[in-house]
View 1 (spheres, rainbow, N blue to C red):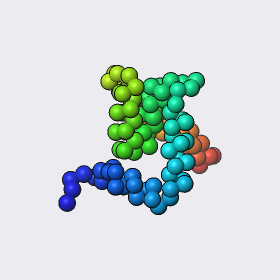
View 2 (tube, rainbow, N blue to C red):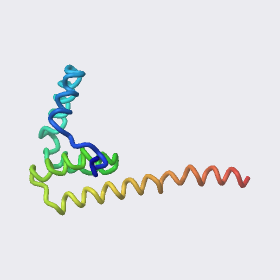
View 3 (cartoon, one colour):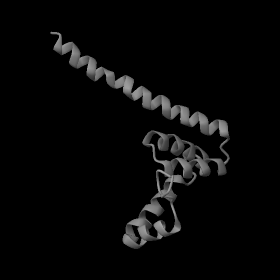
Length: 111
């Protein structure tokens, strides 16, 4: 039994996804390539955004992949860690901001 929580992303798994839904697979790959291409934002910035989003969605595959890609596109270790801190603040900030809902319910309960 493996000690890993998630199975390794292997070429076999990649091939199986492609085999099961080849047209969708190809469309997704084209979409991804288009999204991460240099545009109004350079690819390095897009990869840093992806690192932050991956930490919010908590996808281990995305965290690993986009951290590597961000680094390969020139992001420093400090830039990557700052992107992760932005993600942490946004996730915590979302919980804090949504306390408005709970406080609104409580205010109505007290009236």
